Image: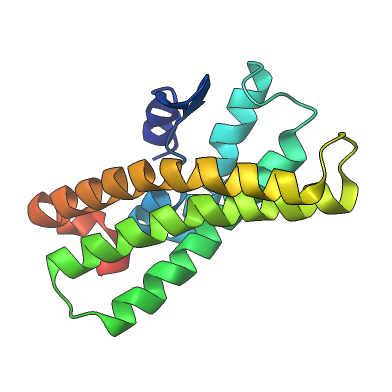
Length: 167
């Protein structure tokens, strides 16, 4: 799972004016291997990336919190709420995973904005950081949701035994 997420994160797509994004994979990992194992998978990815200057060692702590914990555990909580409300069908399960994945990206952006407002040393005000982070990450979240829903749907159709959350 960690290797798949690592590879998927290497694929970037343009957002706007020199900004690009990539999927995070937190909800996908949580749905496939469970929330805690998913968080460990994302932590491995973040640490390996930091060692190769993608995210950097100085940002490792905040990246571990936001990318490994917020997206995986927070997104999985959204997924579980949605699956309790929706019928037990493949489409509903995949859709719940997609919506949760999109929400998880925005949750991580919101977490960063809060962290910046508490301890950030940059010159931008907290409101500007919040607006910039949530706007860009809402777009990234759409891509995250589509990729996650497609992957979960494909696995539920071919190998449902590989989907921890469907057990």
